Length: 324
Image (cartoon, rainbow, N blue to C red; front, side, top):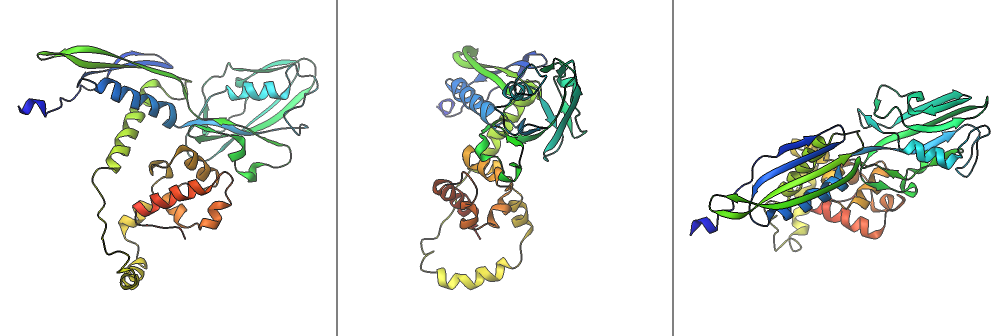
């Protein structure tokens, strides 16, 4: 009888195929039905939650907006921007990096001509950018940043919108495509256990294996955060006036645990992707950073609405915190 209550555990993942930007991984021995449960969950996490690098703004000397042409250059500004977005980078810290380019023609310009600071690494040097057809020169610089998912230009920080700076929609995800397959396999006397095969293709800034491992860790962190239940006192409202003084006394001294909680990144709080991106665009990166803001100051962040603020309040309440 006990066998019906014990769900067997799967094997460790194994590498079926691994190339520069492509990987296939298998997990054997999944309990019947768990192949699709785990496969679909991992696929969604891989597509939405693997951090990547993207260009967020560009400045071209002599150009004020993207609907322009550069004298002596075969491509217009929009085509140049689209080609620049295909250049892939890895950033070694969390700060934005400025990449520059200064070339004279005639010349076919590729990513290898970019001047990249030591804080970043270029992964596809052969990417075509544009062609200078005469003796003209092109000077430009663009900012690359780390992020999650897709962030429209409207949510890019306003302080970057200087005269001549063109803000860009940013697609941060390094994943090109991901799919999964499930097939039955034998475990003991049963033939209906699942084998899960996940197929991942990246842009080369991260490996398929790194993306796969990162998605597993993200799922584990999310699930661990919801283990157990919070205990609420039925008499909270009645005892509120009595507890105020004791709360104020304690709040004066922040414990080590409180400090650690305040360092929690907003990406790990379970907020929606839209709210996370809005907070990041507003320069807020940690739980402690949120608690230092008032509801009015959050409302001033572009893209933040009433729904987002209510979501933030709920998350803060779950940690016993509130807005300023």
